[in-house]
Image 1 (cartoon, protein in one colour):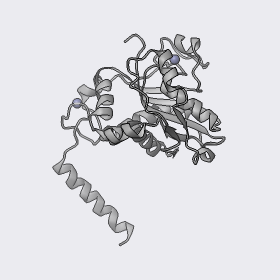
Image 2: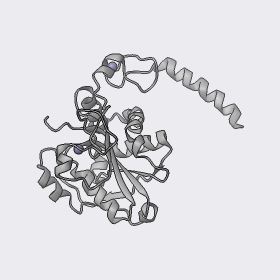
Image 3: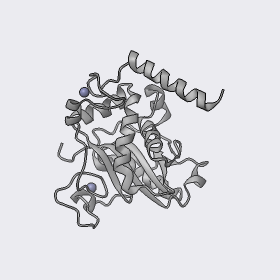
Image 4: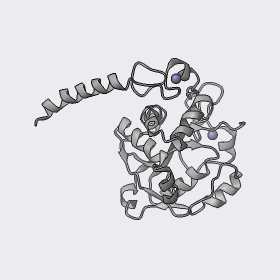
Length: 250
Ligand SMILES: [Zn+2]
Ligand SMILES: [Zn+2]
């Protein structure tokens, strides 16, 4: 069978699927016009980040850019071990719900539209040679959750931008406790040495810019451990992009 035949068949199949399963809003399940989107109400409830942001962690900042690098107070006080960081959403309202659904709610379908949002946030950091890699999950956690949400996001971002993807660039050796309630200092201690570059992927990363992808950035300790592993593995530079950034005073 030739490809010219398969294409119209697939288009017909998709139309049939749309008739049986009309596209639903990712947030509330209401019927929407196109696939993989949000209805108007959920869109308004989703805090997309735009305008001036901290170049290191992606948090929104007051004022206009003047062409120079800008950083929030936290990042100026404690420099991040990466070059630039961006976030697509603020971790609040509908965005928080989407992130939690992707992580714990068995909703891998959220990754695809999230890839579009991530691509928009990551665009200023992408270079021709950029290698995209997810923050790794320990295998025991992977078994329980069935998928690594960061890996799904990394794949969606790579598909959206055409950048190279290395899903197993980094590996997590130890199962680290849940970090949600640990202090920033404790997180660093817990995570030191917990992540390293996959021995068989080092060559792929050597001399290249790496873009790390995760679902949420809170203190940034996990991303810092991953960035350190990339630097140790020979990456030329490390940037980070997350789906949602937790605002500091929450
Ligand atoms: Zn909705
Ligand atoms: Zn910052």
